[in-house]
Image (cartoon, rainbow, N blue to C red; front, side):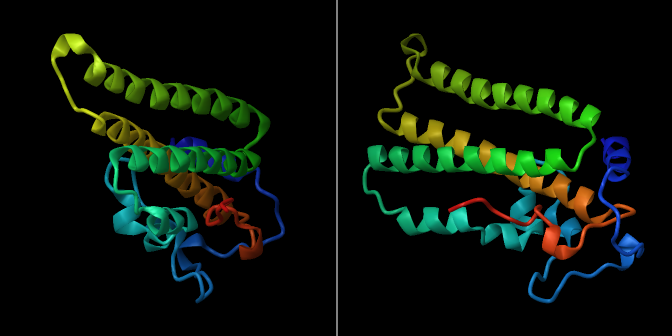
Length: 190
């Protein structure tokens, strides 16, 4: 993966200063270095390492709406925000893809498709097992909330990961983009 990122850096537009990436600072209104975003999915990396992501507009809107007093209401809210995160992943994937050469972009498209199949298939399988009568599991109406919440969070994690990768292609390369051209720290929502 590191080789992929390093080789992809060669394809960024030139015209930025050639400053060493270890000495770069972001503007004071950003207060975060792209490297603070995290390491790997599954480590709760955006919660621990990217305070800016914790305050993203999607989660803010979600928390403002999170008032349903029924499991069905919670499931509907989760489904709404699952769709929003799926759209956000498409936005972040597009931004990432723009920074790649044609060969790497094609490879990324294949991998992203496989990731989407895994993300949807894995949670769908879990949901099917939990709802299959032959195992005697009775979760009542909470099963729909658990299902949509799990799926929403997988897509949320993927968006964070794509933003993380994009930060390296926009910031830590030989020809970093000026801050006004960064997309790694942008959200498409609302």
